[in-house]
Image (cartoon, rainbow, N blue to C red):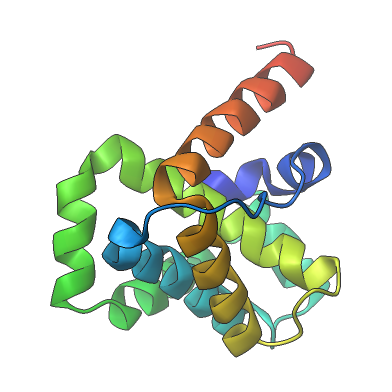
Amino acid sequence: MRYFRTLFIATAICATLPFAAAAHADDAKCEVYSKIGNSMVTFMLPLTMQDFINITTGKDPKLSTEMTQKLIESMDSADYKAMSEMGMGDAELMGEAAGQIAVQLLISGQASSAREVKAAMKDSCMSVGFDTILNNQRKSRANINASLGQ
């Protein structure tokens, strides 16, 4: 759950995704992206803020493992196919972006439930395009690393 370690820094650095027109060829990838956000929020909303912090800082491997299991259970064969086609590097970037944006949607008040998070993430992904999300996440990583002097 590497994307949780930099979650708060990244949400402070990253603005919400821009909503520009993009091709709708990304449907399967956008579905996976939004499912990750949905599953993460479904798992985390009942938790305490301390539980959330413990997951993001890696201090509770049991909760992190439980969340990972829930993410895996939420995927179907089409999701796994889409992820395998994008490759490990892009799948990792997508996971980071999904986690960060899902939390950002909740914290900013743009969504208040897992269903709203999933819908907002799917809409934005379809609007801007999956490649834009990955490129934004690459920039976010670079900004975080620069801010931390890495």
